[in-house]
Length: 149
Image 1 (cartoon, rainbow, N blue to C red):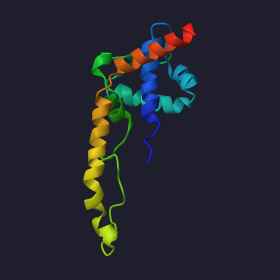
Image 2 (cartoon, rainbow, N blue to C red):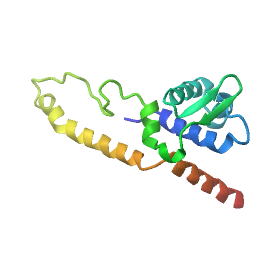
Image 3 (cartoon, rainbow, N blue to C red):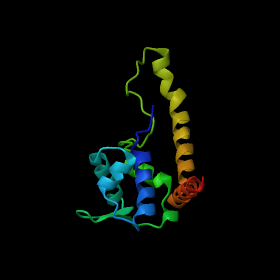
Image 4 (cartoon, rainbow, N blue to C red):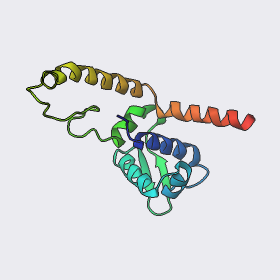
């Protein structure tokens, strides 16, 4: 299983908005060109981030800006906004009705459910340890290193 690219795209978008919004208007076209994805995907994610009050987006060519303090916005916040875990809220799902006549099917939930819930909890705890300020600072450091080389 793989988490969709929406999470990394959203993190990329937020980082670009922070680092570029003082120099130019960061529009969906600017984001799409930088990230290399269709502008429709960018607009969908912008809409999700705006609905969560993480960013503001000016109509037309106005561009996007960050609404929250970067230290108060974690990767978990971004993940929860753009990744749909559905009604269950679970990262890992498997079909609802394994065969009760099969010894594996009858026991698979007992074997996996707690482990998978624990894995999700650990992942979310780790995401919660990194703020957008941390991501932006790391990006600035890497950009600076490359400009010196």
